Length: 398
Image (cartoon, rainbow, N blue to C red; front, top):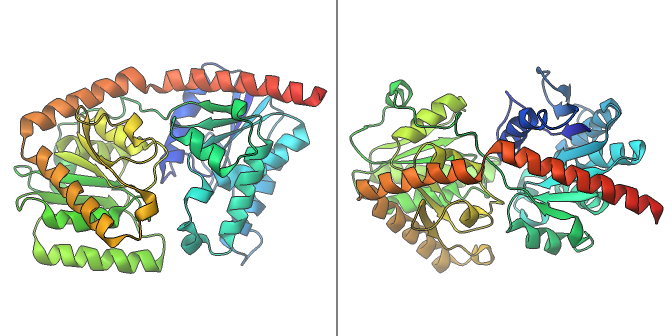
């Protein structure tokens, strides 16, 4: 079986969960297929064919992505299955599938209809991204959901997708890459006090990741608890202004707050997670959440919002604690205030009890090893490819 993987991100240039997913999946797929071609976007790199998002010059970013998609579709060799990851490559997958008359598989890392805040980020391009994703999903011979929670989300967003074409293959973790690292050079270099509790966040400053809620919740953390944010630049000026104010307010009321804006190497993140007390994931939307698996693999307990696929990763009371969140109430000030206060209470529960933190951390790593190996995920993905080929051939007979 010959496979082409289409992705915007590919190592070493990755910034989100989809990039991590593809970077881990490709080497494992090579064990179970005849060949794996990789098409990505951005700078040239080893192991992939890269396409620049620079045409048409001066156009909206989403339009330039479509331009790169055309280049990508033209570069795909003859294969048996085309597998696209995220809306960025949806049009490339669609075009190549039709041109080569081969099945398209798409993985639902997220869904554009469930991320309306991207209007701020993409402007008119949001209509383009939504159209590209919808069209690819409805054409695809198979849709992979990265959690059970994504199945009803896909059916709700795209009711024209045949439910029989939706398959669940969860995200994974490499427990050899993410494992406890007891060196201290990186964590000490960040200026934190290893004798005091550390609450760590890793992620982008977007509406989706809910970092603003964590910063507000931190006002109610115990006084000796430190806050360590590994968070890159905000998506939009509006988000930047909101976050900057909340961060300044937090800094004015407590010490031990550190914001690391540059993206650290994954090996450095691993050490930070190892020496943290609890990982905070206040996402308001999360199909699964690889970042939680990374924390758990480093024996770190997690406090997370109970949205999307997070409850399929974090077992409440066993590997961490979950906080209920209702996306429909995001404009309800009283609900949001209660969510943030509850989040702080859950954090304090763990930071006050080192034995509980250690027990949850070890249980988390055990769960990662037992349930989320990339080799298992690759085998399941190949099974989806086989189903997609059958579906595609059957559809041609009708």
